[in-house]
Length: 389
Image 1 (cartoon, rainbow, N blue to C red):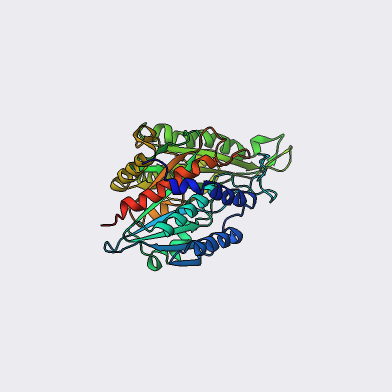
Image 2: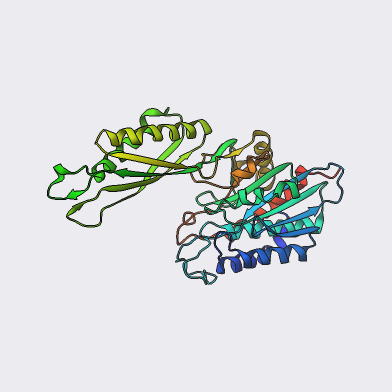
């Protein structure tokens, strides 16, 4: 099945929505304008139910099919929030809000799901119910979990969840997906090293926490390179070292901060345990002390086998078999759609954004030519998952 003709007809309209959202980015849960536009359009399309304020500023809509003999319900999710980045694209629809930018394509994700809502409400060529979830605060706020904690599934029961994200470097009109972990768990660690400060000219009278910190960075890398199997996927990156206030004083404390990314819960558990063991023992070998706080973030985004195979089949229907990679490399980036996939089976798919700048950069832009591909994928997924008998 190629791009749906009806969807192609309102490509320009969806593009206009997307560019308006791009020009007015909003951060985390403060997506009131965006959520208002989403709710207004869903009502305009004739959605059977539109509820705002789910998970603080999330929007949920229900569209019933022509029939409901199956009793099944499918959840489709898009994220709405932007990032704190100064845009440098010089596009005519560039951000009008200084220091805020849609640098991850959530404007495109929201617009594509709105386009699918318009088509599905108009045609209703399915048996069952579709729940459209427009989520705030994906970028670090855990909005997916907040919506679940606010009773998302109790208020809008679904059998399966599906999500989609644009992917720079993946050719336009292509999809990529894999069974299992497709995006990583995103943990953080915060280490405080306590030594004994003193005059920089008499280091022998001190216990220098900066020496401990710099040596510890190398030691921490050994967890991945020497304690894990080479076949295990993991990243441990130290991203900040903070110490000292003067060039002639050895500080008494130093702080080391970083992130851990894993694609397997057992590997995640092991690294946390190893860090908590290694850090105080390593500092003690220098005569210092150290404490560590390990904070778990988003869990691994895990695609279930049956739903992944189904999503890949839908993508093939839309763009052809040669344009769908169903065993792509996972990303070590994080995604809070993972919370929803922890509650129900489902699949997360990448849609090609072409040769654009990378995500989370000040020159990134969503490719509007991907819109009819993404909307057709959503429409076909519902019609195929919930066929009219």
